[in-house]
Image (cartoon, rainbow, N blue to C red; front, side, top):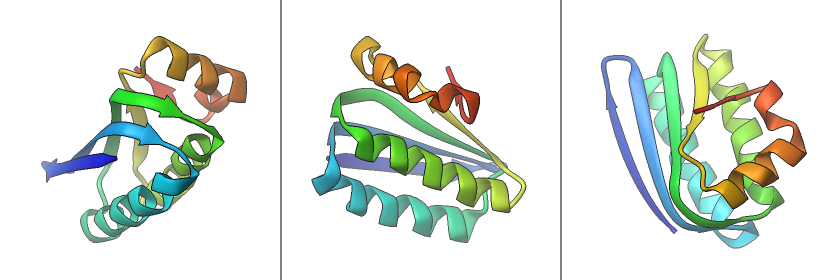
Length: 101
């Protein structure tokens, strides 16, 4: 799992690549939380374009980061999930909580 995080102008973009499962979710969560707590972005984008696999840990990761960003008055968006990842998100109902672009 690779994470590339860039921040500026009240926005943070985290580009993830690889497999997002219970093994990698903890590391991703720690890095994203550290960034959210220090930057307090108004808009947090998690780019899923290069995620090749995701299990329910990914849904938990998104929900937890949404709650954290919302606590600072910000919003979280998930961008560019692959069709099979988007299907998992749709089945979970997460699009009612987080905007998927």
